[in-house]
Image 1 (cartoon, rainbow, N blue to C red):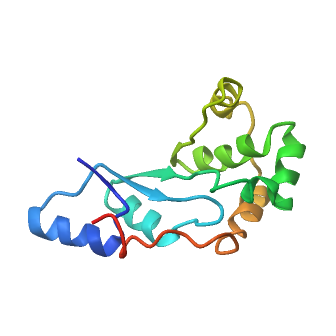
Image 2: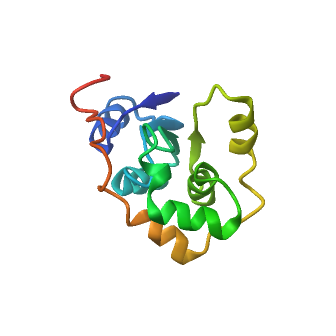
Image 3: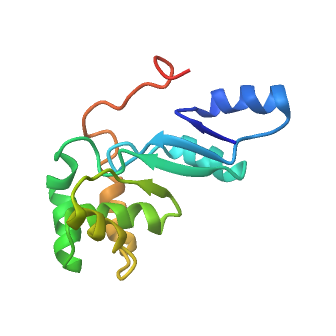
Length: 140
């Protein structure tokens, strides 16, 4: 079973009512919204974290100096740097693109690793971007 936009509190209700937790929770997650509390809950309950809007909405995230610096250090696009941030942390990222070239680039994120300092630089963007969607106000 999979769910979308469930917070740890929402997940607790399901688990308490059924004795079973979902296999996956798809949540809005990017360096702008790192969702540390949800990710920790998922890890503790064997729930896969799936990121939607993994490269943000619009181009704000891809233009962030920290993202651009990481991309340049590895000779990749800013989107590839952000997608590597996801995959390197065990997150499942679902990027959206209609461009065949971008689809190919989005899959080519396993030929490099981010350093702990680069991961931390992207983590530091948490809370600095556009407001995230509030799961308590939609989707349930």
